[in-house]
Image (cartoon, rainbow, N blue to C red; front, side, top):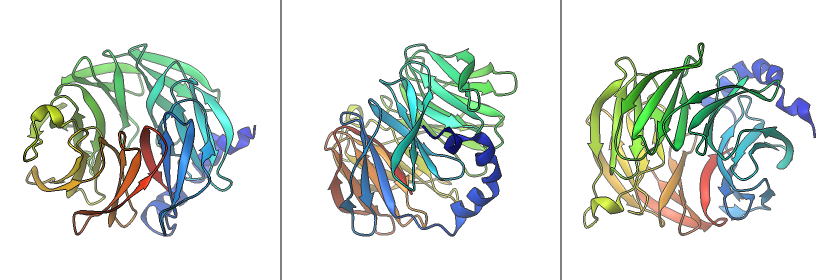
Length: 327
């Protein structure tokens, strides 16, 4: 294994470059989709939506995230208790980072030195030092923790608890739980507004989005999702994104098989786009002209034209796709 590829020092030296890449130069060429049942990453060429050779990975790959320098893809594998490290130049697994049992969602500190991982079975947030590869702290949270989101300044970690219907606020310096915020039923994923002032939380069994003021640390608005002809129980939001300018949010509506476009200022749904079965994970292209939607029950990826608010094409991917990352 090439452990140097995961060196936090290398990540740190590339932070300035990573910031430039995010806003400009590097063109995205691939969509990478984790498949829980196939133990593989599906690779799709964005130019023509053609499937490339899949990347074998560890058991039950779920959440994925780019490293700070955008040279590695980090994959949380729930049944391997590890993060697989995929080198994006060779599209091969080059390392494994031990995590605690059943890792589902994770996030990284801004400097890339620390993993924050939700562990459903332990009802805890594990804090892992990337250099020593050791768990340095475990913070008890509500049962079945799911979403993990680190603030841009790295001072706060938010963790959603599906059973407790809460978002837990953890101070990274003290590694202590400092606040618990009641949200909707079965909160799943979270998105921070670009200015860091709001945290949006998808409530899977509440057919809603809880909007939290990060300054006040309380819910300031609950946005109810609806769809003509659908019962509230059929609207099960999970995936959630906010555009770079903070003006529009996107929510995958789960069993309702649609994605909602939301005007952030007015808190109103402006468009509802039909995609595949159980719309789940989301990714936006760099110019935000395309939205890529992972559909967990139809085992495909739908490409949505954002300006026209319509689906363009669906591409078959692996069984039970979970997360899509663009590179």
